[in-house]
Amino acid sequence: MNNNILEKVTAVFTKILEHDNFELSESTTTHDVDGWESSTHMMIITEIEDEFNIEFELDELWSMKNIGDLVSCIQNKIE
Amino acid sequence: MTILEQIVSSIKDNANNAFCIEDTLYTYKEFAICVSKIQRAIQKHINITDLNVGLIANNDLETYASIIALWLEGKAYVPLNPETPKNRNLNVIKQSDIHTIIDSSENTDYEQFLLINSKKLIGNDDTLTISNYSEDNLAYIFFTSGTTGNPKGVQITHKNLNYFMQAFEDLKYPIESSDRCLQMFDLTFDLSVVSYLAPLLKGACIYTLGSNNIKYLEVLKVMTRHRLTFSLMVPSVLHSLRPYFSKIHFENLKYSMFCGEALHLDITEAWSKCVPNAIIANVYGPTECTIYCTNYTYNPNGFNKSHNGILSIGKEMTTTETIIVDFENNPLPNNHLGELCLSGPQLTRGYWKNDDINKKAFFNVTINNEQKRFYKTGDLCKKDTEGDITYLGRIDFQAKVQGYRVELSEIEFHVKKILSELNVVAIIFENKIGNNEIALAIESPKFKTKKFLDELRTILPDYMIPSKIAFFLKLPLNVNGKINRNEMIKIIKEKYE
Image (tube, rainbow over all chains, first blue to last red):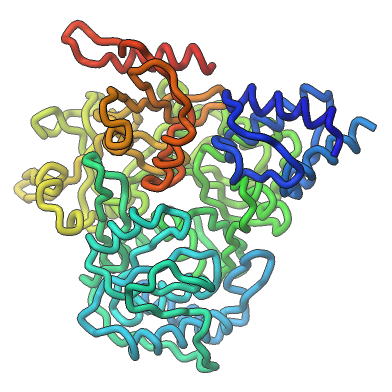
């Protein structure tokens, strides 16, 4: 997993969720992070789009299962 | 015809699909077989006097079939969400005198009760018979947040449901057998009932949500992939999806209904572009008056009634009567602000075994020489001369989170038990995308909250867990020395907006 992207993603999570009681890894899902649910997820996604200057397609959004999927999707877009 | 007779006749000899669950289609014949084998298991294992049955609310054919099977046997279901902390479910089980639980899970958490594992039953028979029916039989008991730390059970009879379905028909948002309908609700939430029942009665197909953790994305996925034609959602879905509206184009959608929370006019306008062929409706109602009981049809090309940017909840439906009352329960004339009260055959007979709350929540009024029983909704409303009702807020500390009713004092009760010496206040606030969130103000120097939140999660369901925590060395007080909630909401909003 691209650590550079992961670092930026972690910063976005901390900013939106306003806490850092988590460590993101490839297999992290919504179950593992306090406050990561429907409403905050969409805020995180929009913030990531701004941060990396990318735009996700809807089917990309609902196919992501964990942080690993999110990071590789970002990587594909910025390459 | 009663709804139960309609269900039996709609299921029988129907070649359509009944359900689409996790991308698998199930025909009405498969559904009938499933109902039939569960019905036989109920006859065999559950005592005839045992009327309330716990139902583990899984997302599968067996769980939906269990509801119908219980109704055919004259029994009520009490839904239990498998994700809800077990102690809370045990509280519900105890309160509603449940001895038997129907569970389709591979491993059950409820061995201490008489269990029917609905996945393990066998049979090929698809005949369904109504073996026990009275309109006074309970169809379900749904538990909602209670102010004293205990959830309270709303009992709904078949009579209530029959009248609700009649009022739904009268709305003229017809479902046809070819329709594909969304069922996005947890089965412990009563909006799920209309979401499966209305399509079942017409032989249409019900699409449930898959297990994706981000629920609102799952709504989008199911709506897009299966080109759904009928949907009922909570407005929170729209707030979350708003950044993606430009990519949403649901041409097949004929009816797009909203319920459970305030619907804002601006987001409705934006949404109407995503659903160009749909009629948008805002319906309103507490569980106590069976699902919903007022309706406002959105006008996409002109004026809409609204207050503070919130769309009107419209007029009473055909089987409900609405009045606005003052502090002493006296009916008020039009255009006066007061508490909305509801009456009619959709109204519950009361909370399950809870006389104290029943005395407070219901009262009688004589109108035109006729005595009528009304339910006090706690919603502050105004009715105009045309009968359209505008919602202005709550008279108490009940809040809505993702459409769920939350009594803030119930959260405070449990938090105080964990943080024994501390002063705490739960507050509802609107976050920057327009969804409600719960903040918890704690009077204490800052401490790590993870352990405390983990403990709270073993007591309360997810939607009742505060998403923001603010520490105050001294909670703000008003001139009377009481905690100043408005000041606190202001401080928290400034922090999070």
